Length: 249
Length: 306
Image (cartoon, rainbow over all chains, first blue to last red; front, side, top):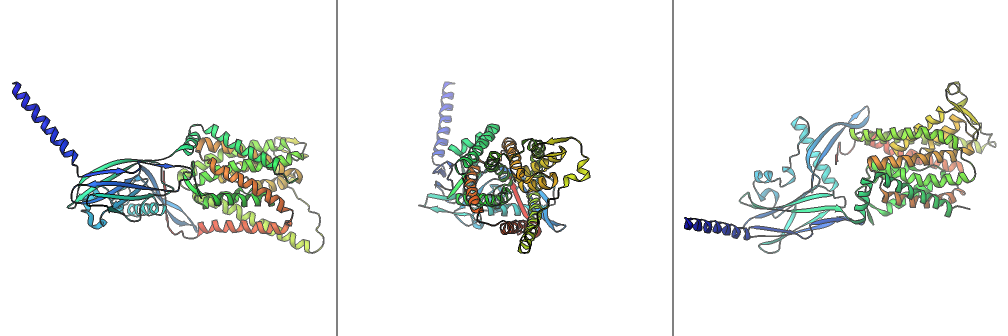
């Protein structure tokens, strides 16, 4: 009986040991040079670098996704000569920010199904419209949304390139624009071989205002009245000061 | 040099903001109009969300109108009683205006309604001013100008029949309180929906509708604008959190400097020509805005994310 348990425990330990062994040699590891983007008073965009290693054959794709937010897309038409918004579609799960780096062309890197399942690439994003709409129309609205986001700099115009520093070691360089939305981002790295995704790694990125900016923003939301009074006070001080010290007599 | 605005959550070039504030302050110093109706559209042109532009502009107007009121107050040119009645109307107007603003934002027509309002306002003002100043110029080339007979509507039977008459000793008026309150109401609406002081509407209304002595008009209207913008700033700060202190501070400081330059420069600029130039500027801005409305936009689609 004891021997049975002894063997059983050894077998379990070996199984765990083997698993640990497997983990130590995982095909993909990644590390963000900075895991937070600090928005300060003088913020004008920021560089983002991701380093990684891959121990197996295959291509690498890195996707940065911002928090999912609702978006309303409106279309104008002419009403009595004036162009005004007449139709609108609300989409639910739109990433506030999306960027993408590939080690190979989008068309060649993997099978379309694999790309779509993992939402790698702008044309694989599937936004959920709010109400039941005509499928064709929704397509036009979705395209318009992607176009609009690209113009504003929240979606990429085309995928970036991943640089391989050696056979195993790579880096992906991104640049976030000055108007990057605040929130918790997810950076996902995929190892793609034979058309399918073999492994993925995920890391978090925090984009937020810091320091004076953050304190002022929190103050304006939490103490609206005090903030309003402060605004008035500054204006009154400036107006009175101008009158007293800059009078033309 | 870019500066990141904490409430607007976007970066703007510091030079452009300071330049805008100075130029608008300068115009305000020369012509005596608040300049809000130029500042807000330009802020929106620069990419600021309309809500932030309107809320922050209300804050800037507090500074501008205060420095004006103090000057008039020192000379005893403010009718506080009349101003107080107008204020009652304008506070109601600005509360309703903030509610309307939020509703328009919600149904997505805010970027249609605000330009239309500006087109109508600036277009009609610009046209009226243009012809009025041309008339003055033409007349002054001939015989010496006849005395300006200022017709005033408050003698009209309709206005005489309104209830709640009050005496306003400073302005030597005996009119229904509904009249100044009504004018104040419209002013309050304008401040909260469009981010303008409304002086250019209040001043002619006070002269022609109420029959106030011209000397008291500027100071009293500035007093009314001051309190209205204080109330509107607090309303916007507490309900829609749309007052950006960093932006407001930059506009206030550059505006104050601009006004002083403008006031000094105004002594050298002759009245009628300056008004023609201002009228031309108003027409230009309103035509630009009208163009946005009547010309097919490059992209029929627009998106808002929140």
